[in-house]
Length: 206
Picture 1: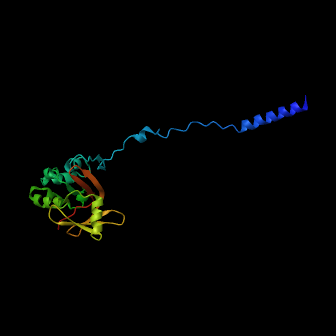
Picture 2: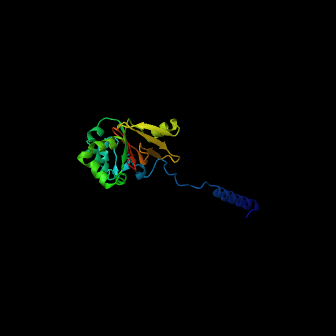
Picture 3: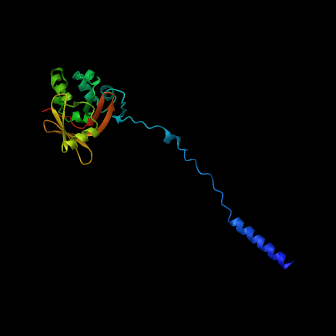
């Protein structure tokens, strides 16, 4: 073979080899950024759960409380005191709601006495001491406490005052007229006629 032709042939082969090496690698099409898991797109419920039941912000305080398994004693007390109709009204009300365990801290004999017809006036006084006019969220309570130098005083429907302290970890503590304390265990359970904060101890008006 003619040496010149041989040289051209080898050069052409080399160029083809280089071109093959430099050919862009085909990549799989990128996943559609808008394609997401169907489950992830499902709207999450925003209704808080109290006592295993969903609390609807379109229901009243009494209706929602009646659904919660940990508020049955409170509901019975509200009914015994004749306050169900009031707490089903337009309000708005802020209710510090003792759970069943909170009522269990009260001696059984005292609980029975309060729930009896003769104890209705005392029971009403205790329950209305847990209610404050208006809709006060945890943020509202914190703002009032900050403005008050760390503690806010709330005037209850009963007429007495409750002291509210916002702790360093953000939790809220109530101090009653008798010097007893109670902690908010679940805040900002919104209702159609107010807001409920679940507490771990029954507060007393003194």
